Length: 301
Length: 168
Image 1 (tube, rainbow over the protein chains, first blue to last red):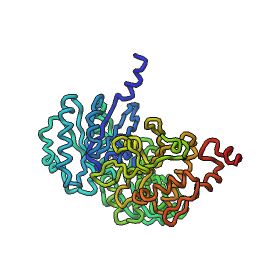
Image 2 (image 1 turned 180 degrees about the horizontal axis):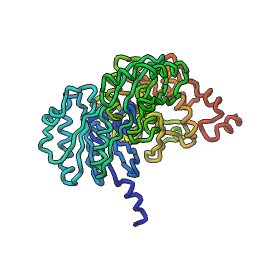
Image 3 (image 1 turned 135 degrees about the horizontal axis):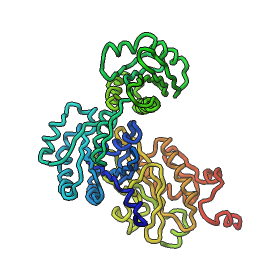
């Protein structure tokens, strides 16, 4: 072990996030860190972020996507284990430019045997653009070794699945996505139900959640008016409901023992969801809430 | 640097930015007063350093000159812009105290919805003048009193300025 070996260790799991400006690289990285949507100004040059997952340190190199900075991508390829190329799938007018830029880095990836993961971001804005279309338009079938996933760093759609894939490509280790909730329901601050999502999408079950004793518990909780407070409500039939009030909404998560995760993990996940919904100010757009919660729940169930 | 430039609080200022819309690139929008060796190419990395994020200070050097930069966000309907205002500081300028003034000025411009590239470029000479004379900076209807901020914070912008005042 040399004196400066710790410096080498710090770049052990280096991942480079590239892609055109406005494709959502910084937003993806911050969603992976914080579990919620965060808006960013454009990245000036490059920005470094570190994250530790199950004892493995990951260095995210967030590379500016403006034409002025694209030359820098190539200069950062040394020691890189994985390049994430982010595409804005809603901006089909820039597919040609995005394809050209990807084409410039492919020879380096091949030469240095760096793995490529493509994030087709902004799925919420263009669900109709499917992966088949992107594979065709970017001629990805000609590339020998890549993976592609659909995500939305705004709604959270597919982010956990994408991270699981990213982690496995980067480290060679498998992590499993945890199911943290059997059902999630969201209410306005007066306790009126707005949406319910359950793992099985069982309509009868969803209906049951919004009825009976549980709704009474929510109604009673709604009267407390204490922001950012939470309670646990045990139901003999279903499991434990965690109820949490944010600034403008109330969220409830159904936790069961057979999920095989500690209840505090589920509680933290509900808190992140509520923070995310507050960031998006969904209480002002109640008509969108069902769609937004459904997209976010791809990470939780 | 001339004797006058060295003794002033700031000798030169520049506004730069990276806009939030697609296809943008970092740019130096205005340097006042113009300095021959301050081209976009020579100073862009100093006024918009790599990894710069809003509401932070950065210090760099250009030959013997010290450049203090403050970054901020300019609100837009789509993605916000990253902006920066840079100052070449005099040899006696107390940088920590100048930071307090700049931060307060940018905050007041933001509160008055005057924080945009056009206004900053137009009023850059007034900002430099206000800092050097430690007087009021008038930007449209907004009046930012440098002297009063210094007084309220019990600070000075230059080394030895209290002594000098007492002597005269």
